[in-house]
Image (tube, rainbow, N blue to C red):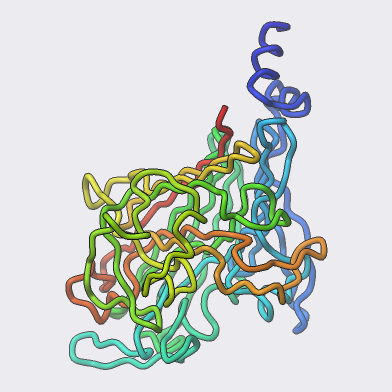
Length: 380
């Protein structure tokens, strides 16, 4: 037993974590009232816990990841997800922090697309384009929720029905999103959807991460690898041009890990359009439906890392370029320019209007299904 304790302490775990490891009957799921929205609706918060002592808080509002509490190489816990202490702020102040995004993640040019020669119009909410599903996307709905423990994993299942014509999209969509958190510090998100009419769909999660802690300032020293040899260049409204371009020789090359800040200020039109990195990378895939490593991020300050695995064809890497210090988050923290990054697994932006991009159409009788895994760890 003493030898076991020495090994674990050497690995950087605290006594609290060690005690949790020896307690097989830990409480893996907790639910509480988070608060009230201005219209009187109650928002619940679910806490998913694992044997090591790490935990993740998720709201039934928007499927929002409110916090991710994980230990660093000294065994000290910190919350690495930006967010709010008041549920109403997620409706009024939030740039999609922690949220499930739908019906269509990212942008659709001019809020229009065509299916079977019928044109559909969506509300425009980002320059002249539609962003993240429209004005009232999936992030602003209260989802039906069901919590359980399955095979030593905390599991939260969220479901939502979006009716035909919702935000201009065709078809009634039935969506189920499942969060699972295990003892290997893996958060697995599975997205399922069906429709009664041909539509387009592109779901993701939009957590803002800072591996030093949500209130720790700049993420420019975080080191990033993206498993992609190509990306999709954008115009000045951040709509892809349709080109699939090589990253080699450009600031977009993250094939080998490098600090976010190394190239972010280079005089480059693409960086100018996004005020930094805010682009879709075309992931290197061994097979269309295989879950592969998409990206990894490491903080040299705390030793924490995130590995992202997905079966999706793309990932949006965003470096908090539009944060400006006006948003007051958890514990009175003001979130400033480049205080966080996002890794949004996805199909490509504006795919309904780019026929050379992987299709996002979903037809009756088909099932939309995709999985993304966020693995949290400490580099020794």
